[in-house]
Structure formats: structure tokens, C-alpha cells
Image (cartoon, rainbow, N blue to C red; front, side, top):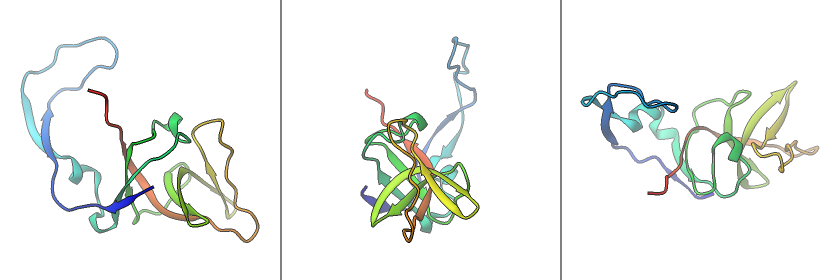
Length: 139
């Protein structure tokens, strides 16, 4: 995965004052209530926030797809169930993080990939916690 630092600035867009139905259509308000800064909403630690592009399909059932852009915060401590970017043998990987009795396990979100448990003497370094995955829709 290639990574690059979060670049300060803003990404403002209009916020519509209603919700959108994912089932049956509902009437929508025809006005914008305010503008929100998407980056401000996502990024709490700008100096520790990075972006990476995903390569592969091991997290597809978590809706993280090949080519997606991840927003990663290195200032957050990983907890069970977080999606993390980890370093194993100098290679980045994105997986679910699980720790029990001091033993770490990384789990894929695709059943064809096994859990990763470090071998004796091997360590897993959590590089950061994934805040968001951005999937570009075909248009």
C-alpha cells in the first residue's frame, strides 16, 4: 500500500437536512441546511492522519475493496474489532484487530483468507486505526 500524509485544508460540501432511505423512497426536503467540512468530521488528529490505497480483497466483507482509499489515524490505540493497518515483516496489511491474554490476531473479512497469528518471536506492529474507507462509485 502506498501512503501519504493527510494534507490540511477542508473539503466542504452541502449537508441536506433530511435522511435518505435505503429501502422505499420518501419525500425529501429541497433545501440545504448548512455546509459541513468532511475532513473536520473525520480527522481528529491531523498530524497523525494518513491515507493509503487498498490492494487486494481480504477485507471485502467489511466493505473495504481493492482500490479504496483508507483514512488512518496513528494516534488511536487499537482495540478489539477495530480495522487496523498493521506491519508484518515490513509489509502493510489491513485487517480486523483482536487481542486476548496478550496474544494478537489479525482477521480478514473474507473467508478464503486465514487469521494471522504471529509465530514465536514475530511481532505485529499496529501502524494505525482505519477511520474510513472511501469507495469511488462508477459514474
